[in-house]
Structure formats: structure tokens, C-alpha cells
Image (tube, rainbow, N blue to C red):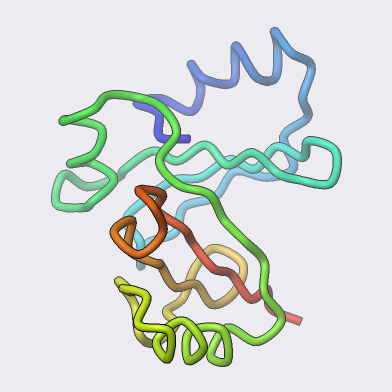
Length: 124
């Protein structure tokens, strides 16, 4: 979920809804600050751009705050990327890159019926 201010967003998710913050950290490679809030077996991720020259900042300027993408955990990100490529599904990243907790790669919305999908392989 893209937000202008994690502090302001936490007033809804933490104070209002009672969700607990697992951690807040900056991811310099992605030029974002993120907050992770466990929700059952899933996790909400609040994302704030730390630079104006990012896709997240452009999304925020164009569309405002809101849902940006969904993230799916995979065991072998390179294998999944190869499978998607073999099926000619459009990718943003053909190779994984560093994310907050492991390797990430994005599937283009054109290849996923209008949904931006992040794949993550968590560090062991």
C-alpha cells in the first residue's frame, strides 16, 4: 500500500485497527521506507517513496495513496521467472534484485491481467 506518510497511515492500521508493526525500515536500493504489519498469515506492507525519481513516487503523484501491488512468496525465484518467461508472460525483472528481506522481481501488469505482482524469495 503506497502512502505519503507511514506515521499517518499507522494511525489507521496500528492505532485504529490494532495491528502491530513488525518493523519499519528503509530500503535504499528501492528508494523506499516500508512498514510491515502482520495480518493473519499475510503481511500488510506500507510503502513510502524516499525519492521522487521512483516508480512508487510516480504512482503516488498520478494515482494517490492506495494499493500498488500484491506480493507472492516463492521458494525459487529464478525458477518461477523462467517459467513465466517460457509462458511469454511479460516481466519487469528477468533477474531478481535485492528487496527488504530477500530477492524480489516484478511481473508486469500487462502479463497479469492488470495487477502488478511482486515475487519474493526470502533470505534463509
